[in-house]
Image 1: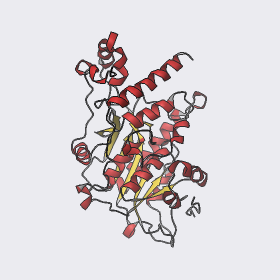
Image 2: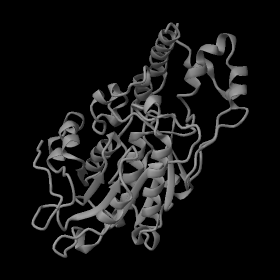
Image 3: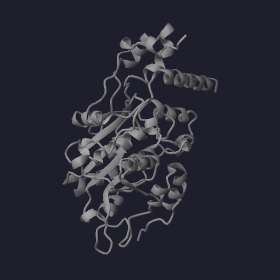
Image 4: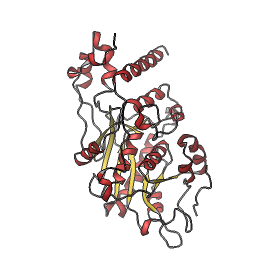
Length: 373
C-alpha cells in the first residue's frame, strides 16, 4: 500500500549569448515590470467556484511544472500535495524552498487515518515528461482504502490532466539527447495516458474533468518581474539543461513571456507563412537591431511554447471556476508580456478562447525601444 512520505523535508555561440544579454538590458529599460501578482483565488468567480480556500489539491508528477504549480496553488489559498517518488521529493526541497509544501508531500495515495485522507478535493496530473503509465488513471481516480474514499465527501470536485499539445515543430524537452532519442515511445506513452483518462467516467461522463495542453515548457523560476517572485522555484532549475543556451531561453521566458493564449482543443498558433519574410524585410539597416525586441513586447505570440508559470496559472484558474465555464480541453501558450493576465483578462480568455494575432512589423515603433542618448 502506498504511504505518505515521512520527509519534511563556437564563436557564433558567444555572439548569440552577447546579443541575448544586450536584448535583456535594452528591453528591461523600456518594458515596464511594475506588476501585481495575478489574484488567483480572489476574483469574483471564486465565490461560487468548485474549489475554495483550504481545499487540498493533489499534484501528481514529477517535474518542475508540478513544483511551480504547488506554489501557485498555495498563493491562491489552496493546499498543494506534491506526489512523487521519495528520491524526487528529497531533491525537490531545494527547488521549492517551502517547508510547508514539502511537509505535505507524499509518495502516493493516503491511507485511512492519515491527515490527507478524506480531504482531497482535486487531482492534477502534471508530469512534464512521459513517465506516468495509463494504469495510474484508474489507480488514482478509483482509489479506496478499506472501502473508503480519500476524496472530500467521497468524491472529487475537479480533475485536470496536463499533457503536451500536438506540434510537429515542438522543441525537445530539458535534457533531451539524440543518442537516447525515444520520441516515438514517449508519444505512445502520452497518447495511452490521455486516451485512458478521456474514457474515464470522471472525464467522459462528468463536467469535473478537463485537459490542459501545453507547448514546449520553459521558465518557472524567479528571474523576472515582481509577480513571479513568490511563485517561482529556485533559479537552480535554469541550470538543469544539457543544451548550451537553454538557460538564457528559460530566463527570457520568465522575464518577457508571462502573457497567455488560451485556445480551445488540442492545437497550436501556427506562424503565418509570410511572417518570417515580412519581419526580415522590415528589420534591415538601422532597424535590424530591434528584430529580437519585436518578439518580446506587445503580446508577440508563441507558436507552440509555454511558460510553466502560465500553465500553473491556467490550471489554478480552472480549479476556481464553475464547471462548464471553460473548455473541457484547452491549450495554453505564451505570448510576450511582463505580467500575468489580470482577473478580468482571464475571464475574457475563458469566455472567448482563441489564438493571439501575429503582429505586423510595419506597425512596430522601433524608436520607442531605442536606447536613450
